[in-house]
Length: 298
Image (tube, rainbow, N blue to C red; front, side, top):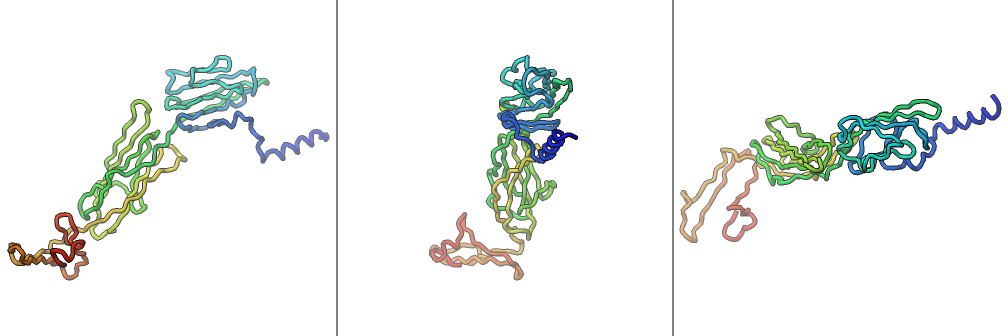
């Protein structure tokens, strides 16, 4: 091996761990290369590289597209010009979609022949996405009653694509609908113009008697594509009331509750001796403990 060949080999070995700086064109948003599945954000530019294509004209290559915009394969080439505002072939042979949309989902293929006659093929399966706004819980309950069905609230996610899913959590753990203690009613709507999705999920639970007195509930949106983070609502904390045992009685003195104006009426709440219930007196919607010392005493 002569000295020139040896020097050339050493340079190649040193360069392998450090990829060369790509041309500025490769820094465009959405630029990708290789045979793989591609996800692109709606409204953003997408550049698909045609492997094996000479970087400068003249070039022998063609792009074939089969998407929601085409009834059959659409063919584009450097000599064929652009396809309206949908796509065009760049000077280096890459394909540019200036603003990718839902209709651009599909298959993209490029066949290029180098100046030495070597043919290289590239293939891409493109899917698009749009991250929705942060989900929220609307019409939340203020409290729950143990042992009976209670509506916790409705989780709403708007403006996403693909549809994705909504999931409920209680005290940080997933809630799995079982049709008994946990049930969910879901609704999915799609905007007729934008194609974006709105999801709704209404949660109903039956808290167990003697369970957690102050459970927390939250909802999360899981995207319909891999490697996309879930979005979470702020948690809500509710109070669970236990039903009044049958043994609890209210005694009235004088009997019948009839008393002359200015007289005294005594109400006694009797509970089982071993009961751990806390007693609250309510008149209409007011807590009588806040009015102690006025017209009654506890």
